Length: 407
Image (cartoon, rainbow, N blue to C red; front, side, top):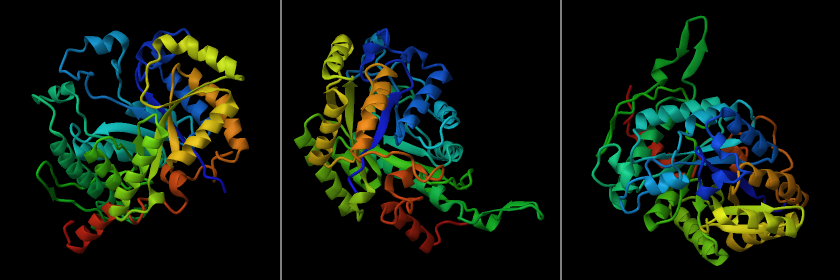
């Protein structure tokens, strides 16, 4: 069987994402981002195109690399305004049965106890189709908003992130045993109290007693995504992430990044196939190459994202280059960005997806119907929960064996 390509749509809950000025293009509908109908239609389009997930980027402050005020960002909608992605995920889940949802949240400025409950709630409501894109946040304004004078240093951010994840893992994986929920109608017993546990976490940054307020969700821990950019980030991603986002536009460089991350994952005892790697890709397509080029010229005044791969061409040319990049880089798939929304994705679903399917490198249908969690779709039927070689499971075994979790 040919290697199957995985696809996510890369979006943000606001009028501007990677090509900020294109919200003003007459074909773009991003200013509808405040209407649920916009998100419901987009989710249905992606499910029709058999996408794995919609990947919702997010920021927790304005872009201010020099600590400047927000005018430069708000003028062109440089991810400002930016609404919370969580509510639209719950809405999109009501009109889809297979599409996954990846949300971005920061370990630096969230609180793990309340965050873990929100994640479990969404994993329940989506029936196990949730992923979390882990970020640590570096913007000055992100630190200023909760009252800090400046962002934490990189080392401090990752130390905090490690403990944040440890608390979440304990809440998701340890607090409730698999058979804790009994639903004994006769005895009016919903959950066995002997199988619901406090976690009693005491650390350098967090003291969390528990227990987790949510019963186990379909995946317990959501699928974990992370962007491996810095050296520390790649180490963090190789240890924790199941999906890793690589930004780059040179196949040779991407291949080296892929190989490095897989080596680091192996050093943590993880199998290479238990980590999926995604590149960033923008596709402008038409029925002919000339039509695709005319579209790109039309979009060009507002297009300036050069951080990812770009293909302009007819469906055969697009499929050729996607296949070539997968073969040359070792990537497992792509996060597709939009130039105009939803037209970029609509063209891709209508024109490119059938060609990928014809070549046998992209699913014809979601299988089996209505039963896969997002993790099972990415890694196989047997992977309903975290893989047995995930480093967190060693933590779980160690905590259980030392009786750290108490009633």
